Length: 498
Image 1 (cartoon, helix red, strand yellow):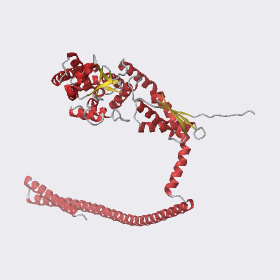
Image 2: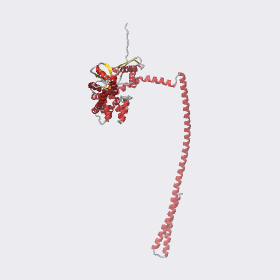
Image 3: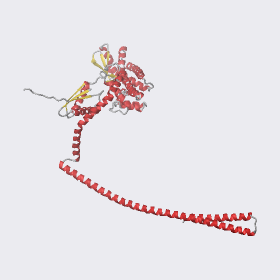
Image 4: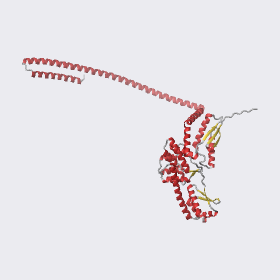
């Protein structure tokens, strides 16, 4: 029985008694009757109060009994749930034990299985007299051979899809870019010769005990060859600007007639100052043509040195102008950063003017541009313009524009020995593959025709061979433009009539 319920019952009984007493007192005070009547009335009220109190007590007891019954019922339900939980706990413990036993059995069986597999492998190796690695190589070789037809077919499908989606658009874009940026010029050959009026002038150039020629070579940094041809002085130097300063200075000295060390120093100094003005002017003109402004004057000065710099006979100013125009056109067409592309094209060969330092023109150019605080994305495009896979689209555009400008017919000339070596390298690369019988490099190394043995190769494998040769050439050699690999496989049938 709930204690709170019992207290509630007694409180209710007390409240009822108090109410009865209050009513009785009120009635006695308000009624002015005789003593007998009052006693009778009091007795009546007392009886009523007793009845009311009994009624309230009965209600309280009924309420207490009801609450006691509810509490007992709840306690019974709790005991039942407790019993169920105990049963469930026992079931879980039993299931856990079973699971542990199953796990142990599985691990033991897995261990036995691994052991059996290893024993079988050892037996197979002993029977076949092959190691696991050798057997794997044989299997993979057989699989590759079986899949050769599938590989060739998929290459054809991929090439056809790429061509159908990209070929026409790429052709239109490149042709339009080349038409927009092409300049009318041919390769220039840089040999600096100065004509002299007579053999007597050679003696004055040499001077007493050779003092004049030594002074001239010290001031200009070139070598003078007076024995190459009559009435001609040949000037040689790896630096085109030094050669130009020497050429102009020598012409002025011959015209002036006063050839001595002091005069040589004066004329050379004056000529150098004039060349500096010319290079600055040429640099400003180049920047103006491509629409680049606010470059540091030192960069503009070095760009102007392109006037006297040639790469394989191609003048650097014309090459840079052409490349920048082509690069800008491509960048506009495909929607990339035009400013970055333009500056990277303009500055891509600036390292070639630093002829007095060691390193490739890419390394020297990147070092110089970082010193001049040029943006890193532009420097990255400059650094990667001769790499196979530039990291940015702007770098790829610089590479494409440079290849178009330098690789088109008539733009450059190359040393014959290097040309012959490249042809031999291309042919030897092709003949290094097993199925190839002959290889011929044609079109100045822009196409490689490969003859394969028809019995050792089929149509699908010929397609794969062409791609494999192209990949090897791309990885191992650098070249202007592209090299087209054509694999020729023919079957001949011969009949003899007797």
